[in-house]
Length: 253
Image 1 (cartoon, rainbow, N blue to C red):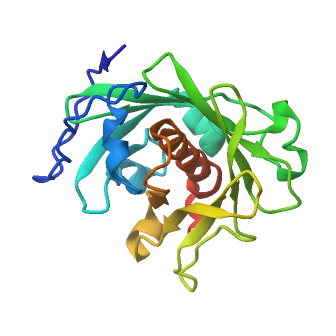
Image 2: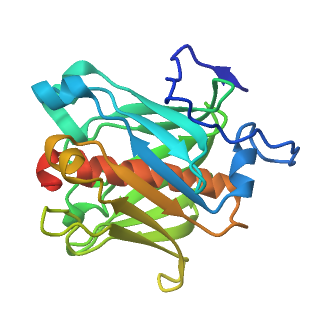
Image 3: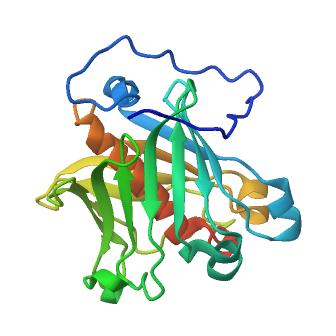
């Protein structure tokens, strides 16, 4: 079922949108046809001036683009004000992802878990951060969940049947500083945990963006022939990593 959302997609100063694919792919949810043509997505979080000036957490918004800079999707967070203030990056949320027709094509649900986040305990469900990916909204196509590790961020990407399809291995230190402006890479691996098949990278956004705000830039790369539902799951994994590691300005500066 296609869902049209009321949230307006902001005018990005004449931003060019990716042309709607003229494809009819059996088994592909409406709106994911875009993903069949690309092997990389760039996610640019919008700077919220009110948040930068007051340090009061606002709802996140992202422009999702292809490698040519054409906008593919627009994503916006739905969350409770008290959760944003009291729980910060731990908060539960719903992320709506819409195309240039204002159709909601992907929905991400992150449940709030009070005790979750510690990598040592993440093998226990109640202590594991996770995100559910739906396309179309209401139909789960996959999950991304944190798994136990000694200190590196480790994740599994699962299909709708909760079978592991991909694994993600984070760096020893995911923080960026003024003296360390390189990208922070989370390597995407096959089920063997060895073969590299993609990468999720937190990109250095410049001094102002990193020090004054918590607005982040990410790139997400994957094989061109990867199933489009799994590409959508990779989008979900990127947002989960963003909230877990980079939503606090202290982690960027």
